[in-house]
Image 1 (cartoon, rainbow, N blue to C red):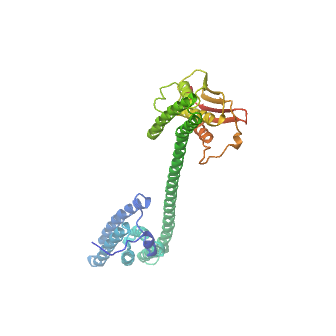
Image 2 (cartoon, rainbow, N blue to C red):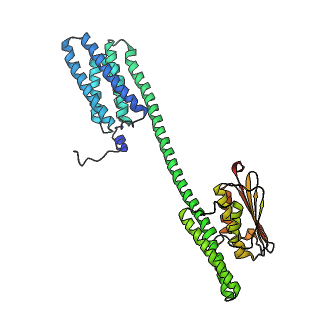
Image 3 (cartoon, helix red, strand yellow):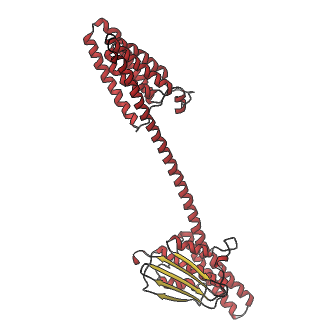
Length: 402
């Protein structure tokens, strides 16, 4: 086992003039396998051709050079695939190959594979030097084969080497650009996922905040109001009635709090027709609240039902806490493609544009109601003025007129 050897990074390889082998799955990786197989086939074919055309005495040197070139080629290919430095091995291979192709031009066809290996195993200036040396040696060998009379044999390998260099550089550039784009897409996806998680967390916090406001906070506030009234008039008969109402309201509030802890639902309320459930929710805070139904009552989606109940609870609780009203009326309307809810009181009224912003002291009710309705694609409005009562109106779409 090797110890104490630092792991080389891709950047280190580039600085050393060595290119890591292309990642698995890229086009260059599959091309490399085909080129290596082609080198083996061409080497055997060239060797057979040379042996058949030359005497055994001439074969010894060429066979030795061919065997050395084969072993060096295999070593460089393995090192390149493992992403390990192979610069000395590569230049030794090029030197042996230069001698071989000059001595035996029959092996010139193998230069294509050797050129590719130079570019895939090395990087930067080292790759160009090794590839250029290969092209020059091939040109010299072919020119020698022509007896120094065919200029095309000299210029052809150089021109082909230049064209292959341009093609390889283009492929390499496109591959690197693709990797860069993939990295950017991956980063953007990670950032989008993180943003969605943050948005989901904020939305869930807002939802829990609305649920707590419309159940726990409103119920406790109304109970406190009743207990304070009972304290002021105790032991009058009216005080006992306020105390009983506060106790009943606290029991309801406790039940809703337990429901909120489990799944933010209202147990037992789904089986009740929507108008009756709205009336029950309103009379928890204003016992004398009246209900008017328009249109043909029908079932609505659970999320629409839940939103309407919470809006009714919050609006009627505000009437009990702030309006000092004699009359409170709830109207629910069933339209072909929507459900409407109006809560009216003849109390003190207020200026909606001057409503108190949310703070530790309150001010969440209207915002929570609006968020509930608009998140379901509905519309919400508040009509009020000092001394003229208040109308809270909501309209929620119902798909398919269910």
